[in-house]
Length: 264
Image (cartoon, rainbow, N blue to C red; front, top):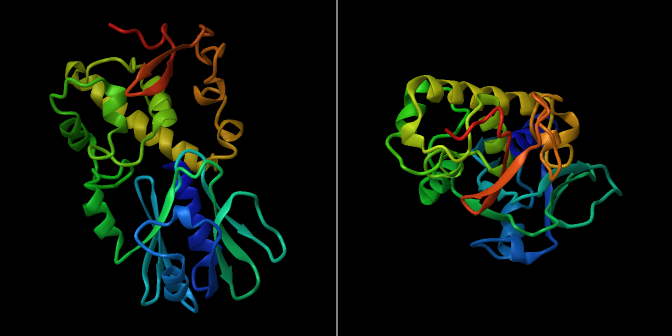
């Protein structure tokens, strides 16, 4: 989510109000539900009116053309290039009237781009849970989302139909900041721990956004007391110096400090 919020601001600040001269689809495989020809026809000459984020999804709104929905996978990004500059692995380029272009870059091709009538339509189609940074989501609502689930807390945090926006690495960071072991069963967490987890979630995501910790510079820009700069084999806890442990949770590799995040 922090990556996508940074991309949203990129569109909102320098790109809103600008006209797309043409849409160049460099890899038709990243499109879902629309052909390259139809996308180019729908967007040519359209003005960028808005940018919204919901969970891990970015929505670029166009006058009378719906919204361009983007999912970035594990290492995709959105970048604004001046005329003459480009990037490898550009899958879609929105050529702007001044010669610059907005590039959807995705080296591993794990994301996708599609055109929808509104953000709400895609959110409903995917049955996404509330956005993790929604101002209407408070500690009580967060506790209700966890409910009486017997799943481990890391898997639950990453379940987009429960809570939208948290992926593998930021679930590790949130649990580290809250001192909660990723294998703990959600229903077994007491009220104090759930409240601590909620506040850690909000603070962790907001800090990453403030630091500009996007996909390409996440570890370099995060505070040194965050887990993520040390999240690798042989890494040590920034809090106590203990060797970090890793284990598979929900099909993903979870890192934690066995001292600061005890299992019991």
